[in-house]
Length: 327
Image (cartoon, rainbow, N blue to C red; front, side, top):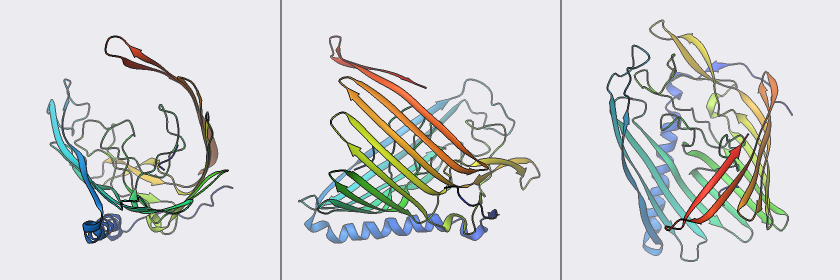
């Protein structure tokens, strides 16, 4: 389920150019601080290094749809995502550092660096404190992640919205017999990434890098979230609340620097209340995600329901087959 009221509108303004680099500086500072702390305690801690190195080639047998897109039929890229972990032998304290880098031959925006995680975790008696840059996943369904709102989507990685940017946060968890309460303080907002004008997997209008934020302090204002989750033998249930900038921008047509029409990301201030549940019956999982959100001119409602059934030990190789249907 997770890893371990209507919003009042304020005036819209664009972030000043010199502030756009602030999240990158903060990410770098946090990563260096966590790495330095990890090195300092490393001699007395258990250490682990793992990760992945990958190469990828996209193949485009057809000509590009728009005149300013890259015309190459093959578009290679490669990257790496190491994960460095330090922890005490009793498991009470953990440091984790996971940088991510991709180089793309043709899409300048897809060539990017991000800190997926640079965090410290402390496990107390019935409570947990997590601080730094991290990723949190909420929800149960596959087709649409309605309730998952903590992390921003890294849209240059793929078009399925499954890849997420690291989010600076402080997360306090209290665990009791009646469930777990998670409180989140998210100190600043991160913009969604978009393909460059030369990128092939984009729409007819390129997206500008400069965004508009519907609150006085732009991305520097903190977001807040809370979540109650409960688990029994067959039921996972969670209710969540969020107050801050929407992770899904409205793309507003505007005139770009070359007087051509571009799309400008506009992030509304929202409040969201959601519920997600999963009921397990043997090899069958019944799933639900539902939410209501205010802040986009009017309150909206949405839900996803589904069922997943697994067929085990099929064929000579004892493979499993999962069947999934969602609406």
